[in-house]
Length: 114
Image (cartoon, rainbow, N blue to C red):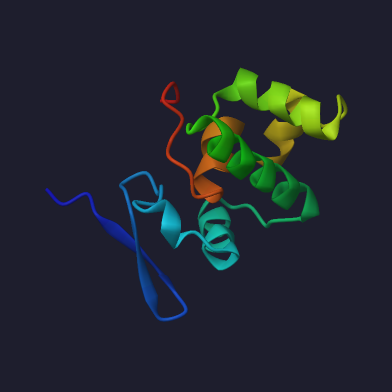
């Protein structure tokens, strides 16, 4: 059974896995992020982009996608305690902020997400 799918963006086919995560991180662009967000029922705002950029920074620094607790700590460190809260991230990236935000940021699925 083939689990390979593709996103079709601006005449390009972007390979994704069966859960919608990019097969190649290098395929990520803001347009790809918008398409991935749309598939999750999310319209990206400045608040979303702020978190996505931090997720990518986290990945560059630690070479992994964060689970919820490290994500909250990282957001708190960089954006302050008002935004570094699970409830804030849940409002932006329901129902599983670490998983959904990582997907939209073009990162691999966090290892502890179902």
